[in-house]
Length: 266
Image (cartoon, rainbow, N blue to C red):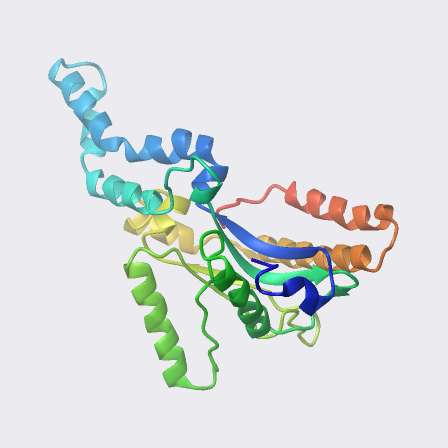
């Protein structure tokens, strides 16, 4: 795709660093799918076994069955949610790569370019090899225009209602600078059904939903900002040809932040 699109000549480089997502994510997490998601989605089969156990008057089976039978639709919705993002992968042709940031080429980073530039630049690459690369749909929304905001909201609603994961909201500038510090560089806005994968099949029950609304995400936001800053600095040092020990300082800083005890579901 890079060769077909004339990328190497246009950017005068023989290497490129992209920020991208490999699809389906199940290809990278087979054990997670098997041991966590599929196990939870198997609730209907569990219910059948509990029914037999209760009929035999096994201790505790009746009470457990009563709790379980209230959840079959939630379990079915959960199974539908995670299966949308899984498909068989037997060869390279079964994978898709969705690039969304052109981070660096020889001697240059692209943190000074806005997100629209990144998306359009990478769209041309995806068009050059639609078999492997996937262009990501996007919208630029002027927040001062209520009609544009309403249109974008409806776009997200339609997308998630059709089974889409959701969208990532970003400031127009790649590095959004506030008066005192950086703004959050990105915020995932996932759909109602996809969130079952994150929070479990029963997250929409009133008690569970209220508990989720009270969670504190400040620590997670702060970690994300620090990781983002270290990632930018590390790549800038690499492109500038600084010694690898200087690059590794940033890498190890990110690894240290990743080891912080923060709930990854936040």
